Structure formats: structure tokens, C-alpha cells
Length: 338
Image (cartoon, rainbow, N blue to C red; front, top):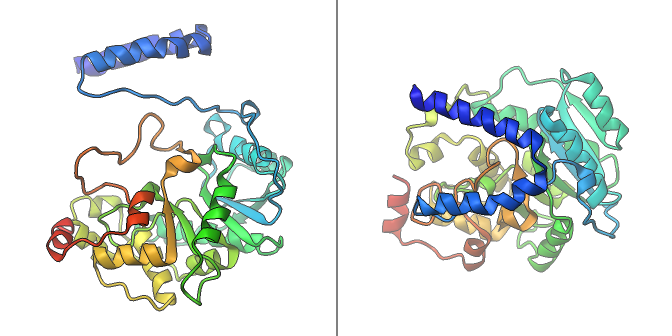
């Protein structure tokens, strides 16, 4: 109890301190704070300041992205004007790209108007009757609706993102285009590989390709997300104690989307890490989220999520893993699924 009240008291003091001290002074003193943290711990402390407002990001591309559409899907994040400022930022750093915000018909009407006023198209969707396992149906409905709206705008490529995430690297679209050009598809069922940013692509969870931020041909992404709704009632509490094998067998969330897509391409999906990595190498391009400076407002605001310096079941599958594509031996594969 004492510890809790101490944290509240210190937080209150920090709040008042931040109100009266200029940001430049805070940034200047971060080094002293970092040194103190390092002095009394066995870790190095790092931090990364990102502008909240689009107007404060001055780096931008001079390219014309009129052939690329961006879908921002999910519930609007009104706090800090996050979703609205994200739209403004993309209008600024990705000139002429077509931006669609795909959200729910019960969202704040004034906020929706503000989004439209800055140049984004808005797709308002009725929430599915059943959320599905881990709310899968919400993502399916809002993503597919946004992609289909892009299909009426004449774009060839699409970037799928979330309303609680933001890309800061103004060269991101050029990077995506270069990657799919450098690594052409091997399947006749794909126009291009799908680029997946690895926020939730866990290395040892089969077929868990990251679904939060994806880039590819519009037609390929529509194929990926055009799947039947998952009407199972499974929440996070029910999966919290499952082994990786049990979770893979349950086939929820990322695995649900990915296995359906691979099956459409004629790729079989037995529960196997080796086979999962093979699918990543043949049909996707997996990159690290740091390459596009992807910020997740909901979770990793102060630290790198799933960044470990020891072997861990929640280790992310990264671009270096995708490039080298080393198969595990059978013994290691089995142990990772426990």
C-alpha cells in the first residue's frame, strides 16, 4: 500500500514538473535520469521522443503516392487526437496517397467530420454481432471494408495499419515498394508478396504472421482479409496458460487469418515451426518494425515490446530471421512448442 501511494505521489509531482518546465529542459536532463537508472540496475536505459503533432514532423517525401492507399482501421483514438493527427501526418509525409479510416458507425460524429475535413475517406461499419475469438471479427470487418473502399479509388497498392499505431518514417512506402520488387512472388496466386511488420510475428508461434501493419498489392490484401467470420467465443483469459502448441491448435487471431490465406494459396498448414517459417519465406516479407519507426500508442509507449537478450518464447521473428531462414531440427522444433 505504501509503495502504491508513493508512486501516486511521485507521479503527481512529475505531472506538475512537466507542466512548468520546457520540453527542451526535460530532454536535456534525460541523460542524468538515464545515468541514475543505469547506476542502480544491470541494464542500459534508452528513450525515444516522437512528435505528437503532424506539424512538428518536417521530414517528408517528394514522391507521388497516388497509386497507394492507406487503411487505418479500428476504434478511433481520441486521446491526444491520436488518430486525427495520424491522418494529418500521413497526408504530410506520403503526398497524394489515398487514406481511408475504417471504423464503427457509433464513433464520435464530430471527430469523424474532423477526419474527413483533413482529406481522408471514412468507412463506417456496423459492428459484427459476435466479436469472435480475441475480437477477430472486428478486425476482419473494418479491414476488409477499408480495403474495398480503396478498390473504388483506383489504387494498386495498399498499406493496412491500425488506429492506435503510427508510422513516422517518411521513406516507408518506398521501402515497401523496393522490397516487393526485390523479392518477387513464387506463387501464381499472388500478384506480389505481402510485407508484414513484425510487431506480433512471434518466432515460435506457427503461422502468426503480424497482421497489424501489412503492405502489398490491393488485390492480395483483399484476398488475405476476405475470410469468413470466426464466431467462437474465446477471450484472452482462456488462452493465458496455454502452451504454444495448444494455442496454435486453437487457431486464433493472427494464426486464424494467416492459415486461411495460406490454404487459399494451396499451402498446407500443419502445426510446425519449420513449415511456418517456410511459408513466411515463400509468401511474405517480414521486416522489423523499427525500419519504419512504427509507434504503438496502446502498448509500447516507453519500451520495446518483446525485445529480449536471452532465449524466450515471445521472441519476435525479424528481418534477419527471414533473410537467413534456418530450419530448426526436429528436437528443437518440438521443444519450442511446449
